Image 1: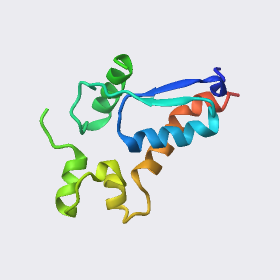
Image 2 (image 1 turned 135 degrees about the vertical axis):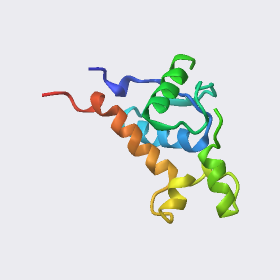
Image 3 (image 1 turned 180 degrees about the vertical axis):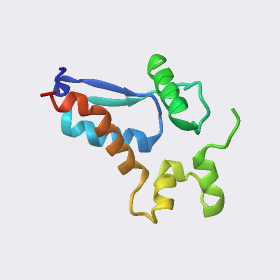
Image 4 (image 1 turned 90 degrees about the vertical axis):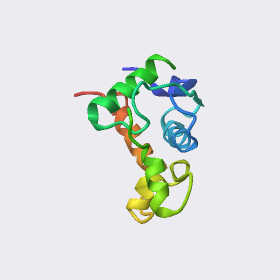
Length: 122
């Protein structure tokens, strides 16, 4: 099992400041020396993936590269009268009345993704 504390550089397949902040917040606790950099790459799926398959395929495509439909960030902007919500609290903040924001959601998701590296199997 790799020791995450030895990581020195981590590339996030996005330049979105919310995603980068979430990665930095989580990795600061498990890989404090790691530099987190954003790399804008095409995912090969719509900006707003539909379902688990597209989500996985998009993530895998982004990792390997270091249709129609509206991206959720744009769809949330319209009824709220705001713009750029995806770079702040995101849809989750709008839908939870600010109880949870996009960064917090990404932090939890990233922590779950790191679980196999953080807790050794029995």
